[in-house]
Image (cartoon, rainbow, N blue to C red):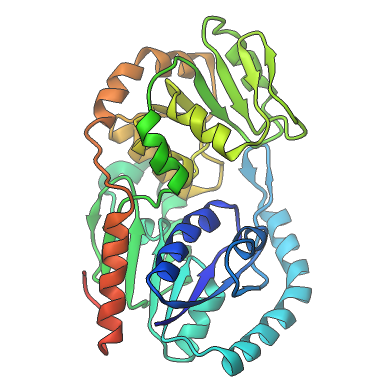
Length: 364
């Protein structure tokens, strides 16, 4: 089939997950045209030949929180340049590539193209779990944020032919044409399963620049090695400073440290959390303020006894993570995921149904 695949460029998680699905589609013989915004363009264009850059939205963060005004101003400024370019891309697409189906990873341009051209749209992403599932009383203390996130997500990609929702937790599905599938895992993470063990160190990933207090908390556990990624972005080689090992960016190094860690301290991003769950690693998660999707991930992580949800990294929180690590690990052993097979099988089934003439497809 001819497939238009849209990837949102906010953060790199969507791009790394979409790359896994794109490889599957290309290997299966589909003709795929990709549209993507932001830094994700470089990642996908390095591997796939048919990638077009479009303008997308971005989020501005300060002090581990979304800055709403700065985000608004940045996006309004970006639209002055981006909107005309998006229109040009649209017109070129009409003349050069006529897709039979659109797949959107929370990306609006491809979705709108599909709807405008009356082409079926399949949604693949983790965000739709907020709108299409019932979370019971779990969101009771976050009602305002939950309602706002639900409203935004509901309006983002309405009335798709089907929604494949990636998740490590499985709430009750409340809407039709919705299938829950396990998190999308990179090949490197799948391979790391074979070396997964507990070497005693704790992996720390924090990309913010305002977490000086974090280092002091970690120094308080002098008998534990913390391997820290993200805080020192200018680092070019590993540096050891007492019980803290500063790591430079390295995809394989990060995955190896994750696979052999005793526990993980990080934000509430879905990609890393899904990988930690797959590899059986207890986690202390501190979601970004103003990102309810991350808060929901953290709430479910704690509910399933896979780790802890806290609003900041404190001595008490790290101590509890370490003291309860064995208990969390026992719970994580009950989580079963066989690579990406469930997702690929569900997607192939949907594409087969659409190729046979369906426009709205039920559960595969």
